[in-house]
Amino acid sequence: MQISYFDYYLPKELIAQFPEEKRDNSRLLVLDRKIGKIEHRIFYEIVDYLNPEDTLVLNNTKVIPARLYGFKERTKGKIEVFLLERIDDFTFRVLLRTRGKIKTGERIVFGDGILSGKIKDLDKEGFRLFEFEEDGLLFEKINKVGKIPLPPYIKREPLDLDEERYQTVYASKEGAVASPTAGLHFTPELLKKIIEKGINITYVTLHINYATFNPVKEEDISKHKMYREYFEFPKETARVIRETREKGKRILAVGTTSCRVLETVANLNKELSATKGWTDLFIYPPYVFKLTDMLLTNFHFPKSTLLMLVSAFCGSDIWKKAYKEAIEKKYRFYSYGDAMLII
Image: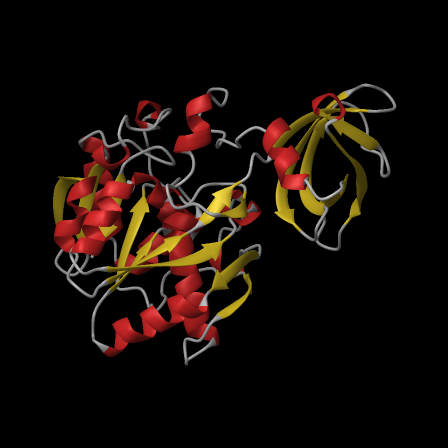
């Protein structure tokens, strides 16, 4: 399949620069993929589309302030270190931005000396490594000096509000460098209402990294290599998913990341037992979904792997109709934008 199939035109003014004032007041486009019906609702009405004993699967990853601004100890030159993925206790894959050459072994200092580390060699996949000098308070210090890594299409500097609003209300496991944005619309009150209706809520973890914003450059998308991301599918989640399946109820993946965890587990493990590891699963048409019955997602960038997953889930050109109508009705797009529920 050619990459041009996943292209569309989006007016720049529809790219959301700020979140909706209240999370669950975002708009919700509901797409019935079987009959092509589209409805326009408010996000908190999502509960109307869920039945008792259905299951919501949420990604509980937490975004770290992955954009670090420091200086080279030797030359005092400015440098940006963008954390992509944690390799071990003190080492990360990173992107570096600075003037001049990048030297292996160079010591970088952040936040008036609160945090420091050294630039290491490239790894076998071509990423630069960075090793922090730390005594056990690494994330505490990163949280002090780092900035929330807003996507490049948000044309402003991070504000205090982003520290709260670029996280889901259930974020608990630090490690992502981008937010699982479909989950940004939930409030504690809405989650409580969902539980009161008899709907299960369970959690997976997928630490979003470079894979999310790595562009597809191949004309034939099947040649694109998806970068790996770390995931966890806990024992309790496995139990809930198995019971949901046994009862013939539906599973709603909240976001493409939750969907990829579910499908990774289904492909690896027919017993659906607890597992964790790395996934480089690239979902694009045609793909037969094994555990995902419904998908909640934001509106995605043209030609992105996220849009390709949505297209595969729709199973036809119906996603184009939905996107066209969303643009005509001036929905807000991308990370801080509105949502789409595909049933």
